[in-house]
Image 1 (cartoon, rainbow, N blue to C red):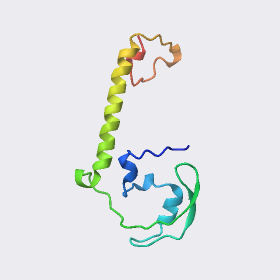
Image 2 (cartoon, rainbow, N blue to C red):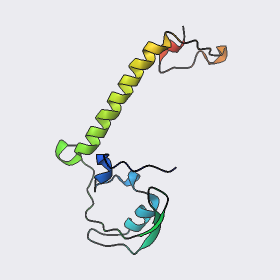
Image 3 (spheres, rainbow, N blue to C red):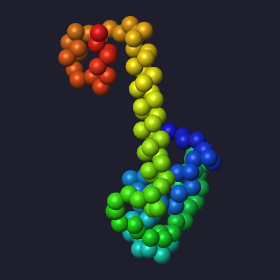
Image 4 (tube, rainbow, N blue to C red):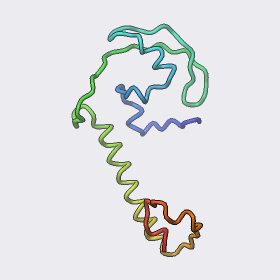
Length: 120
């Protein structure tokens, strides 16, 4: 999937990444490096799908630690915004469900629904 670059997205300007967030080609280039080492060049794709050569440097490996505003502000901000988006969406959905007609087949009515208002 092609992701569009958003220059206003602060998380894209971070130089700290979770291992799970690193694209596979970059991870493969970094996995055997020690802090301060520079990788050999390799081919990869940018956010628009254009092929490019890349060289990466491993500056430091940060061990797992409890989150703090000083070190993890962008991640905490992102989590807070996602939580707020979800709460606002759930409030909107709750208002809309009252005016919706929803049919759920009888064999599925006993499933555990996240939103209990689906069943009337």
